[in-house]
Length: 290
Image (cartoon, rainbow, N blue to C red):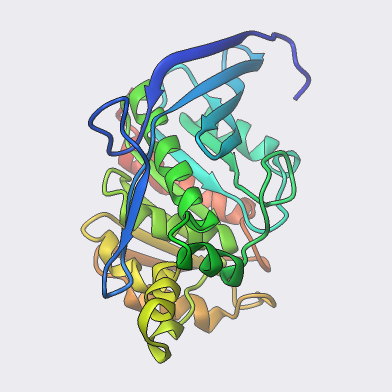
């Protein structure tokens, strides 16, 4: 996407998830069942319009959080029918999703790519590291995983405020894990779509005390049933050589209705077959909107 129009603006109005006031501080808790609850601090955003035409607008949005800037990219028509907060898998960069974003926007859906912390692109951080996060948890500090959950919830609030449409979280591979936890923790997400992803089979149950609570707090298997009655849609390929097909099935089996499992053509990660199926189904759901 070559920039044809560049506009910078700072939105002074704070964006936050589950906030009751602009002075609210971030906090989290994890109950005895390992279920996370968060209060996310307000953020401001800086926006740069990269492309604007009759079909869509592509914007680079920086969320200025209390723990650092988080970069995201939004492709959206003027009046979308629904919106997606997309959570990439390990190492996925925006360059690999530009055509996808335009396609969703052309079909009538806003698509926000969140460059999550530590994914090796523009947003600082470290790759998924439960040991490092547990060290922070023990000290009463914020694990990066919890910060990412807040980032996704904040992104959901930003899209909902801007467009007034249902907002879903869609995650691929390890991104599907973050997305599942975020969808369960933030009940304002309209649903969850996971691609080539899984939980950790409730591995935390074999531990006790703080170790148990923390490990369960980052395990999608501990959350997937909590998304109901909002829909859960799991995609997995039988030829996935990174996260086994049976692991995706286990995550699906833990979900409550309404839910759907779809085997797709391909290997590991989101692809055009997944896009085709999402857009086709949403055309039936949101076809008369807008």
